[in-house]
Image (cartoon, rainbow, N blue to C red):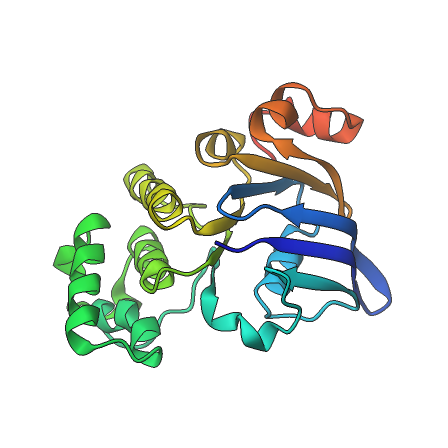
Length: 237
């Protein structure tokens, strides 16, 4: 489990501010959904939380630790278009465990379990660059959860994939959260998905958090006018 505390976080590109978040806490062991229109700053926030970009100003604490170098091995990120290694599916999933010095027997057992649960056993020896979009996303998620991370960051992981792959991935996201209390932050354009998966949700607009709380509270009783307009739509574009 990992709790995230944000303090006065800003991000600027060429003097244009794209993030401006005061104080916000993401509770440990929860699934936090982030929704908002394109350009709201959702992906930028995920990249900063995952250590892939640095904020212009402000601080982020992970279980009270500010130094990202101390906790990065407990964090993993999955993007809409993930980068897969130029090897087969088995070794893609095994990679995080290999670099963390897992025993070969444990790696083999864990990968085989994930192949079965993700319904991709038939792809075990297939090269990653030959996979379909849905297959690639399944592999990326399996790789991300292989070592039981404390924090899983997902940036639209099920966008533009087939319905069956989405069902399988959502099932695995719930499972890793429930079985290992992994804290999960997921960016999604689908309000229906947010309702299915998330315990908490926040709405972003122009780099700011304009509404946040438990799913029922935000979905059915939003206080912010912009958030209310977004939520009234079936999906956010």
